[in-house]
Length: 361
Image (cartoon, helix red, strand yellow):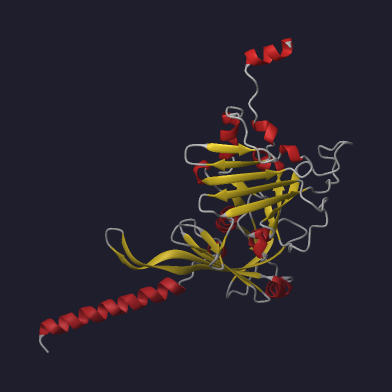
């Protein structure tokens, strides 16, 4: 074999050996120190998180190509809840290792009640000079077990996977534990967004006030016109609609969200739901013909005296919302109030001159 071929084979062998060593150490090197083993490095671009409890239930969070977080590959996730989970992993602090007296008991508790958290960051198989990266992949950068919160003092039992030493961990500035950021209930993670429509995406809005039928109406939108119909189906007179209020009403559909979704089946209802029938019904149809129907139900008054009066027996802050006859959610009035407008709200007041003539008569 001539020297040129030998050099070529040597270079190929060297490259292969370098690749093997890189992959081995890149996937298996452990950062030293308790805090470094537990806390997520802030520079890691988190692309996936897997939660698994002792019973084998798994929740898989993954960011798709558009940057949207999905739960188990299909359901939209509350991005704020995911952000809080990642933030907790990046800010976690270690108070110290569990004492040798309690260590065995804590490890048993972690094994029985702990939630395993595997975090994956965005990486590339090929990294070239000039900040050129090819073949995107996900690499595990953290593996923890989040145990029960410590009842007698602030903190949570935590251990790195594969290590026999548990720690007391906490979040600076908080007086509670971090277990709440790693809930295994899928409903706790689902996207609470109810509506996200611009005025140009709305084709029809139907509003029903069961206790005040005269305030019900139907609004139909065309490209350059709108048609307003009262509860009898009769069109409103030209010029009788306050277009400024109508514009504010339509813009209120841009970002409407519930406080949280509830794991309640359609045939069931929350124990504190006050009314059997809705007090308000809102139906919205977009330009694609997709319709979403929202039913609003009163909630029993909270026993804390908040904004209560003798004339009101329901919670003035929150109500129950049912979307398309399926999901039940807890929602806040201040978020939905701009959408809960009666027909009379849109009727334009008379011009000053006309009002004066009416008074004289």
